[in-house]
Image (cartoon, rainbow, N blue to C red; front, top):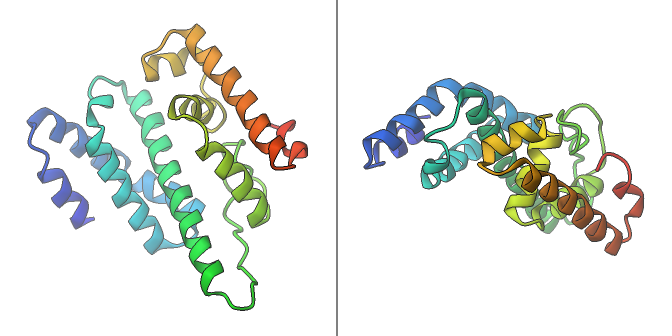
Amino acid sequence: MLMILELIQTIENDDEREVVERIFHQYYKYMMARAQSILNNHHDAEDAVMETFCRISENVKQFVHLEKTETAALVSIYTRNVAINLYNRKKKQREIFDMSGEIESCQACGDPMSGNPQALIVDDETVDIVYNALDRLEAKYRDAIVLKYYNHLKNVEIANILGLEVNTVNSHIFRAKSKLREILGEEGYERITYGKI
């Protein structure tokens, strides 16, 4: 936590520093809970939240004029994406060093489209398949999908958060779903593509 506060103090613009400080005070506990629900490890969650604040401080202009609910949704996206990426990195490290090839299953990770990481226990392979497919989407498509299916927002709310027209959001979601089906289909996972996507 101290490292995050030190990071915030390095932001030169007063208005931007205040925005990040407000995010810290309002959402730090939520971000920790969100990251821990994915990583199932307190220390990893701390690392993920630190990395999330680094990304927020680099992209603070996105947060300056947002309403509270919009800020919460965007903070959730950042935290989730960082935690998933960290989970995947840790899993790959375990695979490299695990001579027996037996990898501890991730019981904290659930249905990636449900918005509730603990709603459904799935095996590591399925988690990685969907997460990797999401990571292969362009950021604008991935953000639209995450806001729609993780945060359960309406398209008009997503448009407000992302600063887009509703028709553009509709298009992004349609293209994201099509691209996910294509990616998963190419990898031989057609069964996954027609459920919740």
